[in-house]
Amino acid sequence: MARILNLETATTNCSVSISEGNNIICLKENNAENYSHSEQLHLFIKEALEEVSLSFSDLDAIAVSKGPGSYTGLRIGVSAAKGLCFSLDLPLISIPTLESMANQIKVSEGEVIIPVLDARRMEVYSSVYNSVYQEVRDTRAEVIDEDSFKEFGSHSKIYIVGSGAEKCREIVKHSNFTFNTSVVPSAREMGKIASRKFQEGSFEDVAYFEPYYLKDFVLQVKKKS
Image (tube, rainbow, N blue to C red):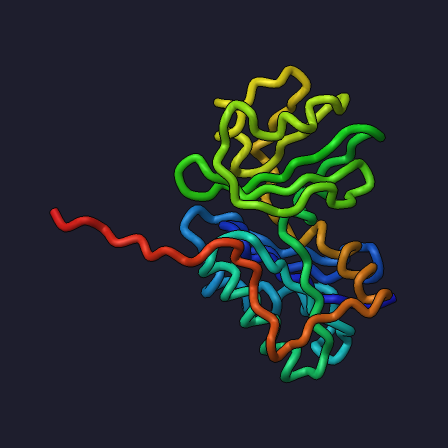
């Protein structure tokens, strides 16, 4: 079974796990409101390896959450992953952030999961997955209105999960929608996805891989008083 170091920094949750096959053998994370990734990521990596008595030489690959998400958070995670892959000569696996979020919810056949990350104003990053976690609609940055996701209204139940769920709850009023704001991207769900991609040989070009920002970075400048 492949041992993979999984890094998740797309949102406020700085999360590191080590997986063996589909099993997570160690998890270190802290969901701090004020983004602590630059201070905590490498510390969590060190602590995770020590906790399970492994060294970098015991790893078979590095997996990183590729986005969408926070511009700065994604840069930190991807830079760390690429640096480790270069120095250790390991393959790089990228995992869509919304896919790992969808994997936190177990649903029945015919139901769908819509992971949503809060973006600016009334906008969210979203995608749609079926009960076996196959993407059935592409990832988008979209403005939420009363017609959002109505094309999935015929499904028996639709789960809208993530930091953008509250924004959706205020506007989207379909009766078969369930909203869950507690789901945050975590390295806990990355293990089985990374294991599958490792077995498939689905690796990124370490030199050219970039995070999936989905939108251009916009610098927020405070107004002078």
